Length: 379
Image 1 (tube, rainbow, N blue to C red):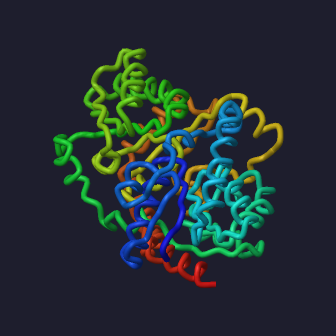
Image 2 (image 1 turned 30 degrees about the horizontal axis):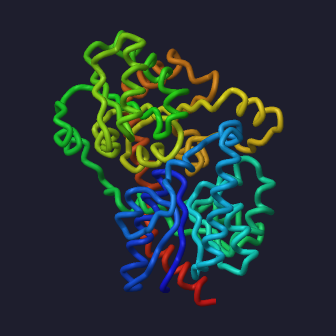
Image 3 (image 1 turned 90 degrees about the vertical axis):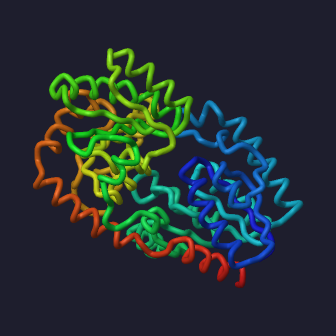
């Protein structure tokens, strides 16, 4: 390989892309990589043509507001790559943007791969036809996703999850507490309200109110929160202040340590649920999308799965309590957190199950993904 292209749509994709770039550069000296990525991909060697932040948008209604700008950006990328064709284009997550880009590039004769399957098995299942038209290869992080594509004739390789490779199978919560300067004794709850502005705007006030309930019930409880950026930290600070809570410690860019130090994690749905699982932390999961998005999804019956928390999907059973939209209330969330704090036997069982699931995802993902891409280019 001499030249490839990648486009990531958010910070979690930036981390995945960085690991893949490093592995490919290790194998192919002088490899050039360009596209869209964040700080991790750029540090690994990507030349980013546009800022990653412009693609970090969630929800049907939210995307509509930015649609003209996104379409214009995709046209510019098609024009750029048609003039400078890469040996393979890899879209990393961001399916609503990347699948359309991949389809156009594939029509122009370029090989395309998509890294991180969209949740087509869970909702908007009609997208499978669009995916088949868009990609020469799907790289999945989860084993049940690969089985779904195989049954529908889409070329796929299960590579495992890079985060599972990075995390220790037997995490040491004491080490994380020492790292953050937290006491070795006493109960700690971690709050993770999301990594995007829209997420924190919607679920942050609910988490702040939940934290206030928890502190009223358990004044000795230590609260910590993981914040992806300084901007999100300031937003969550205002949400905490609105409920009169001043004792929560907000920590930037230390998500692993914040979760690893906690007895229970209260988290927005998403990548953080996987990380909490790998750290073997009992968790409560909640999420809210824009009301209009929720109404459209409900009216069109777009969701085909009962559960949405990743640990539950992987296990095929409800291991962690999950609350969505109106069910995500401070009273319910506080009760669920307190139940986990007061049930050591349940916490022990969850740690065992989470370790089993960790082993299933620990597959040297960067190397397996690189192998699959090399085979695709060699075809």
